[in-house]
Amino acid sequence: AASGRLLDGLRKWYYNAAGFNKLGLMRDDTIYENEDVKEALKRLPEDMYNDRLFRLKRALDLSMRQQILPKEQWVKYEEV
Image (tube, rainbow, N blue to C red):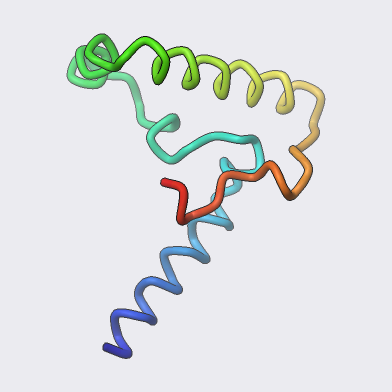
């Protein structure tokens, strides 16, 4: 039980250290788009696909301006 909590704590630390959540991205938004991923994206419901596009565009804009979102808008580990 203690090793499970330790591993979960390590996962949360790495998730926050990676930094993509500070741009409003989810972990799956950062996956390299090979043929399998492209096919999976085609199968997403339209609203989920549009939400993903919004997150990617917002992250690109923030990155170009060298900014991050306010902390209350960061994607939390529990949301993924």
